[in-house]
Image 1 (cartoon, rainbow, N blue to C red):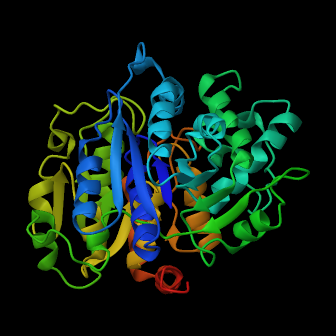
Image 2: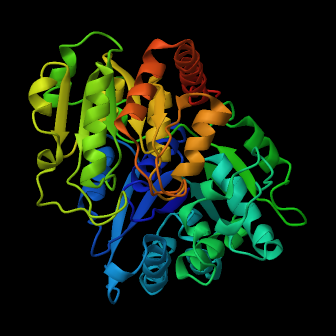
Length: 461
């Protein structure tokens, strides 16, 4: 049987989808997988194609094809989800041609597995009588919200960001409106909100939804999804917990690129003694926030490994300047004063290998779902610092609901992406995580989730 896979051309979505296809191909030898790679001007498919080719060379029945890139007018003025949705729209003809060609092969297509932000591709598969399944790369809580959002949209008269009372969503504790995913907090006339709602409305059309999570991590959400509570009066597709699915599987046992300088540095430090700070590929901060992070790390007295990007000119994750040296934003003398116990690294860091290292004892993270699952896989407790997208909801779940992390208070702003985390606040969080009784409970809870997560993907899990 052949399964065709359509990932979103986002760095945070593609790796876990490739790993899902690989896992199924290994566990079910009767299945073969073809991954369709959509190129965009800002996303190269070369790395993904090389990764898939390496899996194929190792004997996994997995292959890839690429469809031509399309160009949007003025993409710099279009928000990410709108861009992705338009790319999928404009790829329809090429996608249809690819599916027809694959359907005509000796092994017809049994299923079409798509990213949850590519639901406009459902129409293409339906026209060819191919059943569609969705891979949900975020949490079960996020899925519960997305299935329920069309109902909230009809019932809520004001903008969501203007609400003063918590929202009731099946499968989760009451949620502060300010913690909703970024597109939901925009004006409802905004294209980004409209596309988000569009994908929410189309989710029920899938034959099934595969979620990158596991039952013990989010039991309440999975129960609500299974019982159809999130879509009252409607049809909820079958929901399957298939996680934790993380990228770079060669490092999931702790085997990484040991030649990387960051890993060599970690080798010199005791078990569980280093706090790792990394905020994703869009985790750039204004220069003032970079200085506050440095101050907090220095005040804490703890060992740290900090992956830092060039500063942004406004809020986190927006408009980074890749030619600017991030070290210029650090306080004068900071590197010298923390020499030996701290390493500031500019550029890419092998996050999975770092989290797997015995010396890593805490992770200050933007709370992207992939990063969260990687932390769980290796049992590294979190300090939650959400920046954009659905990360505030992830942070609430990490800290309040699951109990595997600590939160941070921001000074100024409205509790959304704005506001600074002062050095003293970061110092407090680090000390609490590594020294206090509260921190001990968080560390123990993360160890428990680590064991449950690994058990979930064992044979029979």
